[in-house]
Length: 164
Image 1 (cartoon, one colour):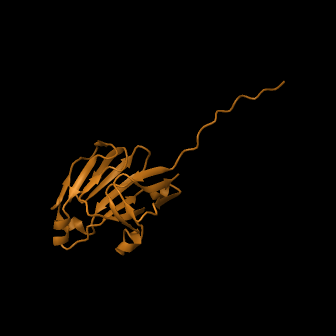
Image 2: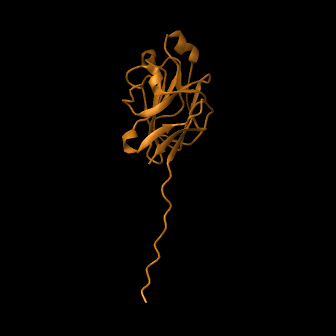
Image 3: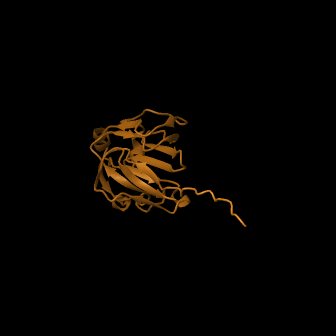
């Protein structure tokens, strides 16, 4: 009699979830009409219009980049998702005024950890939009990146699904 070895049943990998780094109203990237984010040149994601001024970590991982002007931060999740969190449009021109970063490049981060804060008042006074843009910058490594269909989101709710 012939017996087959029992095959090891492995669970299919699940999609990756990126939680909301800030709460607020959701918009599509195309609504920005800026020519870079709206055209998804940096990757897929969405925009959060918030009344809050604090950005929290959307997953466990590491800080891989902080702009000199402190308006944007790059993260790498423990599952390989590269994320750009960018506060405002053209806020690089503010040279760090109104931004405070609570982590440094190379730091390990955990979901819900405070990463940075910003002053909506200073951004508005400087004449810039204060929307928070969340982009999966290595979108091409995945099948797709899908934003939740919710209109309003709270911190740490599921914002993006990265389809593997």
